[in-house]
Structures are given as C-alpha cells and as structure tokens.
Amino acid sequence: MRLCRFDNDRLGIVEGEHVLDVTVALDVIPPSNYPLPTHDLLIANLEQVCARASQLAPGAERKPISQVKLLSPVANPGKLVAAPVNYLKHLEEARADSGIHHNSQIIEIQRIGLFLKATSSLIGPGEPVALRHLDRRNDHEIELAIVIGKSGTRIQKDQAWNYIAAYTIGLDMTVRGPEERSLRKSVDSFSVLGPWLVTADEIDDATSLDFELSVNGETRQKANTRDLVLGIPELIEYASSFYRLHPGDVIYTGTPEGVGPVQPGDVITAEFEKIGRMEVSVTSA
Figure 1 (tube, rainbow, N blue to C red):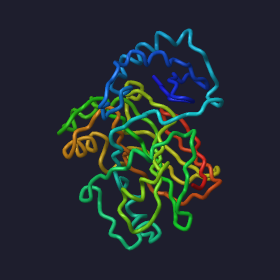
Figure 2 (cartoon, helix red, strand yellow):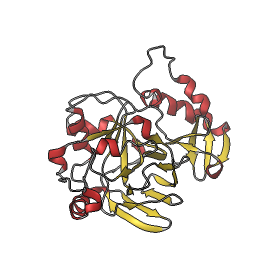
Figure 3 (tube, rainbow, N blue to C red):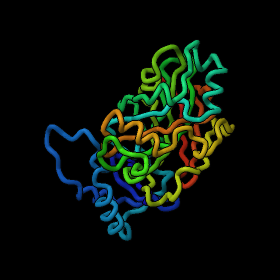
Figure 4 (cartoon, one colour):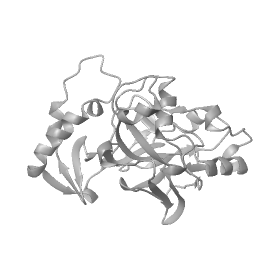
C-alpha cells in the first residue's frame, strides 16, 4: 500500500494520480496520554491502519495528487539516522572536492559510523527547502529512506528485514563547512521525506532500486542501491548495536556521487524505482 499524509494531517491511499482520503482509519490508533510516546503512533499501528484504510477505500473521497500538499509521511520519528559516504564513488568525490571536505578527513563509513539528524529538520515535499547560509554551498543528497516498524535492539542482519515497515525517498540536504555533519545537516527543512510511504510488502527487493535526482531538469545523481557499501540489513544491525530502534525511526541509507549545490528558485526532482517521484522547491529562510 502507498500511504501519504496531506493537507491538514489527512491520511490518504495513493492510487495512480489520485489520493483516497481514508483519514477515518486513524481512529484505530489507541489514544495516548501524557507523557506521549517517543515513537510514531501511525507506524506502530500500521498493520491495523492499513486494514481499516482498505475497507474505507471504495467509498473514499478522491483528490488529484496535484491538488494536495504532501507532508512528511512519518509525522513523529524518534530518530533520523543517517549513513555518511555509503557509496564508494561518493567517498571518492568527497575526498577529491575541497568544497565538500573543507580540509576535514573523509573517513570510511565502517570507521566513522552513523550520525543523527535533528527531527526538527523534517519536512515533506509540499514544503520548500529553506536555505539559511546563502554565503556557503548547500548541497542535495538523494537517499533511500527506511522506516522502522517495530522496536528492537542488537538486531542481527539476518533478521533486519523483519523490522522494516516501509520505504520512502529521502533528501539529506547539507550546508558545507568544517562543522560536524549532524549540525550542518540539521538545518530546519534539511531532512525531506516523501512523497509517500510504500509498505515493505510492496517492494520485493530493495537491494536493487534505480534512482535519480535532477535540479531544474538537469540530472545530477543517478545510481542503484546495489552499490551501497553497508547494505540495508547491515545498517539496521549497526544502528541497533548502539541504540534501540523504535517504530517510525528513519534510516537515511546514504547518497551516491553527483552531489551538488542548489540555490533559491531551484526545483529538485527525486525519483526512486517502485516508490515514486517528488518535486521539492528551494527558497531562502
């Protein structure tokens, strides 16, 4: 199933070029009291929500996708986990380009590990990426994003696939400079997810997905997930060896070569095989 969040926190099933409004399906989520859970309630109850949404679909109001505002399909992730330099050609370009490395040593992912992005940086494709530091280079990075479906820690890689609820497209935007990655990649609006969730049962092989990013129609990045240095199960095993993963946690799996700067007025188009396509505008904060 393809599920989206749109307009004022409505829930929709995506069918072709239309959204079926199945917001009533959210009623199956058990109510919560203060202190509220630190995970995403929709993802924690995804199976029940999908079942109810399927029942509602035949009579649901249909709207053209072009007429709704798409929000991040995950509303409340506890963590945004990200994998740096997880494609060899991107590692090579990062080491060769001073505009990327800023005289900092670029270390292999196996040694430097993962990093966290602030959840306050999360937006959907219906909102613009807003650049704050216009005197510095701000780059696009397209990535496959994994949405964790259930709680787990010290997950072994042969069990990792059982912890994935869904997939979506991620843009890990970054302002270049000498500071730590987590700071430069946590600017408000610098973590984009969209255009919707594709539940794990819809993608039989996420290890071989073609994807592409263009800016104003010019192709910048084009690759396949088969080229990941640490694959999807390895990333889940690695992350969960340091901290417990919870429903709604998102893992950005890494970006390939071709990263480059964007400016206010640009339009980023990100497309993933078996997931879909989204357009994200760039503005200034």
